[in-house]
Structure formats: structure tokens, C-alpha cells
View 1: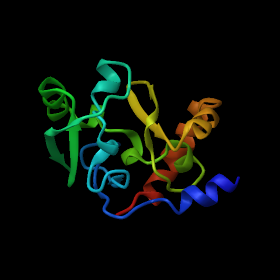
View 2: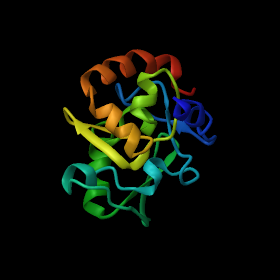
View 3: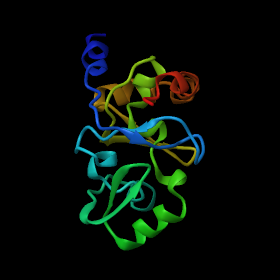
View 4: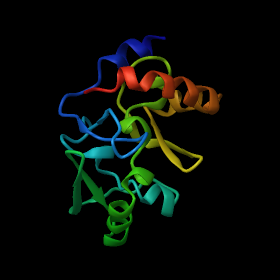
Length: 152
């Protein structure tokens, strides 16, 4: 459990408001991997359309809830603009497993799952394996914890 001690301290400043429950959600977009940029600069739509993590371009961006979002194509940007709540990661892009455990930690865009049409990020491959052992249980716990943990 040393990972929790480490990941708990890795939440960086510079978070901006973003939602995942609804368009008026509480919570923040994690922007610590690339200062001010959501999902570490990866294209959130590509997870759904290409089934893999794809780096976004600094030339194809939008601002949503105070964070910059990058895309690999204009088509993906347009899809995001039409339905940002569909494509934005759960829990503002923080680590889903950590949220379930009552902690805040960075979400790594290379460690992800889509469950019931929702994108979830995790801290690293090891944490993702823990997450995958009981995704429904961890989602239930994270949903309950998120309102109190969400940076304001």
C-alpha cells in the first residue's frame, strides 16, 4: 500500500473545473501531467473511436471547463464539442482506483478503460490491474467518494 502514500501526494495544482456527473458537475479536470492540459494532452475522443490512447495536437485544441483539450483530428474535436460529457474522463481524469480508495492521484492516459460508455483513467499499469479486478465495485465506491474528493 506504499503506492497510496506516493500517489496521494502527486496531485498537481492548476486544476480547472470540469464535470462527469452532468454538465454542471462538481470537480476538477486533472491537468498535472501537462500543465493546464486535460488527459495529459491525449485525445479523449480517440479512446472511443480508435480504441487506443492517441496523443492530441497542440494545433487542434479547445478550452472546456478551464482546461485545454487536445485532439488528433478536427473531427474528434467536433465530436467533443458536441458532447463533452460523453468523452471527458470520469472523475476529471484523476485515477479511478484512487478515488474508490478515498484518495486523489493522477490519471495516466496510457492506463485506461471504457466501461458502459465512460472513460476511466488509472495511475499506472499495476493500479489498473487492481481496478480491473472489480470495476463495478470500484466505480460504486468512487462515485460515492468523488463529491467529497473533487477539488473545488
